[in-house]
Amino acid sequence: MSIEVNPYILLEGQAREAITFYQESLGARLLFIQTAGEVPQQPDAPKTAAEQALIAHSVLRIGDSTVFVADLEPGQTLRKGNAINICISTEDAGTSEQLFSALKADGEVEIELGPAYFSPAYGMLTDKYGVTFQIFTKRPR
Image 1 (cartoon, rainbow, N blue to C red):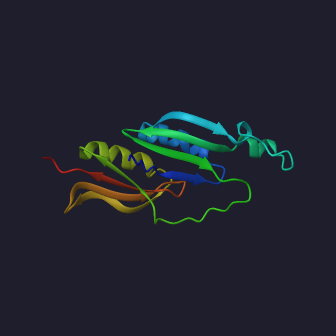
Image 2: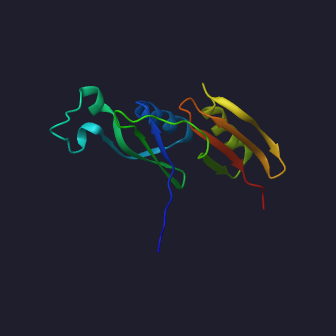
């Protein structure tokens, strides 16, 4: 049996903007994107043009990992929290610094990137979309 677990980022109308941000800051590749207007519609509940422009589903490839990003359906509410976050592991502190610096733009640093007993460069931040990232640098072998 094969199981794959992917982080799924849900936003309130900011998915398209976040996708661009992750492409620029993390080098993400957009593999798939579908708007709410491209999915089968319910005739008894027509969507406005703004609702049709929302992202129903997207797939990003960041390094060797896959991340999903979408907007919430109209009427759904976002419950923000950090119970689930994304940990990005790198091989060197320079790469970690580059990613950390890009993601912290207009975000909030929780742990400044620096040496820790378990990593030569570790930090934690919440980006401008409310997504919490841990940046972890592996120790050289």
